[in-house]
Image 1 (cartoon, rainbow, N blue to C red):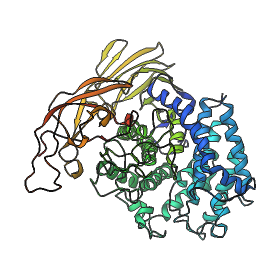
Image 2: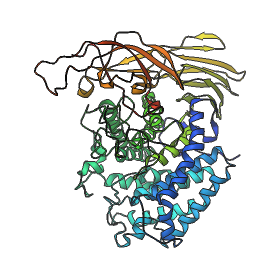
Image 3: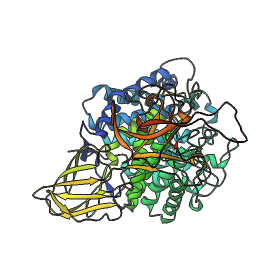
Image 4: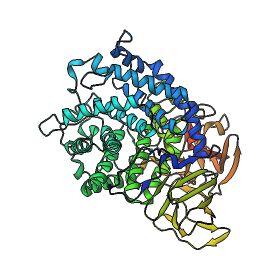
Amino acid sequence: MTTHQGPVQPTPTATTALRPVALDGVAFAADGFLGRWQRRNATGTLPHCVEQLEVSGALDNLRLVAGETTGEFRNMWFADSDVHKTLEAAAWQLTSDPNDERLRAFVDTTAELLAKAQGDDGYLNSYYTAVKPDLRWQELHYSHELYVAGHLIQAAVAAARAGVGAELVAVARRVADLVVDHFGTPDGPTPLDGHPGIETALVELYRVTGHRPYLDLARRMLDARGHGLLDGDRFGSSYLVDHVPLREADEVAGHVVRQLYLLAGMVDVAVETGDDELFDAARRLWDDAFGRKTYLTGAQGSRHRDEAFGDPYELPADRAYGETCAAIASVQWNWRMLLATGESRYADELERALYNAVAGSTSSDGTRFFYANPLHLRTGHDGSHEDAPSQRLPWYACACCPPNLARLVASLHGYTATTDDTGVQLHLYSAGTVRADVGEIVTRTEYPWDGRVELDVTGPAPFTLALRVPDWCAEVSVLVDGVPVDVRPDRGYVRLHRDWSAGATVALDLAMPVRVVTAHPRVDAVRGCVALARGPLVYCVEQADLPADVVLEDVRIDPTATVTRTDVPDVPVALTARGTVVPPDGDALYRTHASENAAAALTLTAIPYFLWDNRSPGPMRVWIPTTTTG
């Protein structure tokens, strides 16, 4: 039987604490939260992306270069990457649905098109071939040529691991070999692209092929970065993550997606080469990103202007950029940090981003998307421009996010469970089955709506089953075959070591009380506000649950009152809290002595943030001013 590996597969000699369970070894149940998400991706998001490749002109650009059509180049200069990410999603999906002939035909015919569009020397980029053939490799601060190549390589890695698209693998290897030939020698051009992404792709291709020059070039790319060699005239060198040598960096900065993709590559190179100095830099940057520059939802990026990190604690709710691709990159980086160290904090942040920032980017039917993910949409917001719309859109001029979502969700079961010399570790909880060499775990749970996780465990020999206790969980209990077990979390995990050969049922109960959350006092933008959270989910108040005559910005919440569950259609767990509405006294913008109308009692309903904008467009906020706000 062929074993399909997932999107991250360190080699046996890599210095990692954990190893992913093979993609075939994890299957989400159709009625579980993650299983339903994957099915929606397969039936909604992925077909929608394939359709939009035709509508947007991304495939026609390749046909133009291949001589199959005439006309002009359309779309963004890096639109080829939309094709590549969709191909990657299709390859991962074919590991779950190998009999999907339409999807297999898409992979095969698109691979044939790419082969026809590819130059004799291996070069493949429709924009620079059709529009700027004389500037190939000459505008790397801007061109995204290596970024586009990286996504093609990642699609090929997925195809190789899925056992499909042999021609796609051949096309991508010709591109990778060209990149190595052009950039891989000390006396060659500096191997830098203004948009990182190829680094981790080259490492994964090395992991698939064993061809060392791919890994060596990835490391050279990292060491070349940070010396101001790229043209950063628009937003500066930090925007391109070229402002400080990576081994010396201690603060994340610049364009968030570029920074996080680069960090994923740093970890990949570090664990494959045993480079502790490089990994220590990644750890320092993680501490900065998640200690001072991450939103409650796991979103990152507080500045629209350059899609960038802000200053420490600069986290405005209404101006949050929180690009969807950044949340996806956060999942990818945190998974690599988790594999490298086995530390639960990385799984905690992966989960936070996944259930809030990533999940909230997509509509309930899987065909409409947010590019930016604010934590507050104001009353009267002008959502006419796609850079800051009032509701999800079916596609974008820069369409990086939808196919990126498709590829992540199609491979999501590859981010669930790991093994080491002691046994199996479960990091994400959803109904389904995990099969590893040491045994099998069948999970039944309504997580994230309920904190009870029941597991049927079997195995031919003793092993340790490690179950993550999220950092939001203050109380945990465990039963084995109905008998309480006195265990204390060890480094974020409950660890159960026993002989499972006769089979046993484990019941893990993670307490999920509602949490009333406040921000660090230096987060000025939400001072005097609280947010509601339960389990891994952040909640929000949406205009759809307010009386028609109530303006969202006039609402306040009593932070001392008991928050209870309530019923809202299509929301498994909604919350209700006591609050007030306090309309302003007059229209004066500024006053010497602030005054307000009398407060009127109001019951507030809160729904999970990821479900907002699925009923009707309108204002929303996560951070709610309190009744004690002056």
